[in-house]
Length: 348
Image (cartoon, rainbow, N blue to C red; front, side):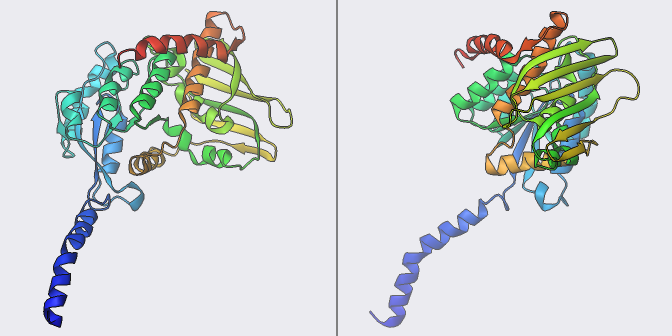
């Protein structure tokens, strides 16, 4: 075989390898955006998130994910939900998002899910087909309508080997993240506050107080042991005692839920190296950046354990109210909810 024919033969042998390299490049996240589907168009979050994610001029930290389809159904018995769906549906259609009539159809068109239904009660039912289909899910607040449902969601995600997570946007306020990352040293206490409107269909703090409670846990971390709540028409004050610091120093965190005029978001953290302000709210963008990272890496930025701790704190606050302000052990509400969750998981 002459030199020219030999080179040609080698080229033919290598051609399939070059082709495979080319196909791999075509399938990279940079050239093929992750297709996102939204469940629930009864919250402004669905519109705000889509505007950022579908922006053709989005910065690199928001690029690579695009909302392509949505299932709009909201809650039939919450007025604020039913009233929003028609308008938000038209807004999201104007951004090039396809509207589908079922979750099953949605799952055939997307790679991952934004579970945005404002009502936490149907979240468990809505997420089950997503988990069975192997689609990673970001679950907007509240993660569920009960602590038992929240536990069941994470247990089913583990069973189906699918990554999920949930968070309020307040977790990613600049001040809260600075404290979480050591600005005041070891956090020994935190006073956090937020608006706390109530919704009869949900535990008191789940509906809107979750924002301030998430701020509290962003600073304090998991490990709350007991909860006491004082509740009035205009204000809730919830005091939690956490696992002591390594040196034995007591750790106490409070959440103030505000229902009168002038409510805002914020807090103060007390640490081993100083005191710092937690707020203010910095908008949705930082949360959306974390959502994009999650869908690209498959790594949830908030652990299931911490999220469950947050909802156990809020459930314990409800139980304290029912008991007239008595101290309630978080372990007690966890034990009860875990038993309920086992029944909800059966067959799924």
